[in-house]
Length: 219
Ligand SMILES: O=C(O)CCC(=O)C(=O)O
Ligand SMILES: [Fe+2]
Image (cartoon, rainbow, N blue to C red):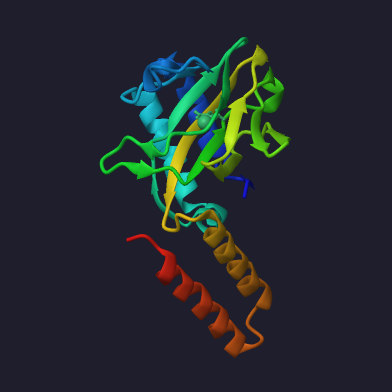
C-alpha cells in the first residue's frame, strides 16, 4: 500500500534543513549505483557533515511518526541520503535493491521519499509508481513523505525546470510480507474505531493484533 505521511517535519526542522542544504557537497548519484545507466542525479556523500545532520533530523522524525509506525512496523531504518535533481536529471524506471548494504544488511521492505522543497520550485520531477497498467505520480509538500513497498517499480520523472530536493531512505519491517502488514494495519484501525465502550471487544482486538504480530514477526 502506498501512503502519504503528513507533517513528518515541522516548520523548525524544515528551516534547519533549509539552512544546511547549501552546505551539502553534492556529487554524482552513481556513486552508490556504479553500473546504473538510468540514474542521473546528485547525491550527498555519506560522510558529508551537512547530510549527516539532515539524516539525523529526518531519521528521528520518520522513526517516531505514528502513521509510519502503524503502516511499516519498522524494525530498522537505513541511512538517509539527500538527493538533488537539476533540469535534465531523472531516475528511470527501476526497482530498489533487495538488500541495503549496512552491517547487518537491511532488507528493503519499504522505500521512503521525504520531500524537502516545494513542488512549485520545479517542473517535472514527479515520483511515479507503476501499478499494473496504471501510473500514480506524486509531488508532495516539504515535510511530507511517500512510503511505498520496495517491490514497486518506480521512477523520478525528468526535471524540466528548477531543483527537486528530497531525502530518501529504506525500512526493514518486522513483518516481511506486505499482505500480513496490511492486515495488521486494518486491525489497528478496527481497534481505533471500536473505541473502549465494549471492554471485551477491546481485549479481543488487542489480542488478535498482538498474537498475529508474534506469529509473523521476524526475529
Ligand atoms: O527521489 C526519489 O523520490 C526516489 C529516488 C529513488 O527512486 C531511489 O533513489 O531509488
Ligand atoms: Fe528507487
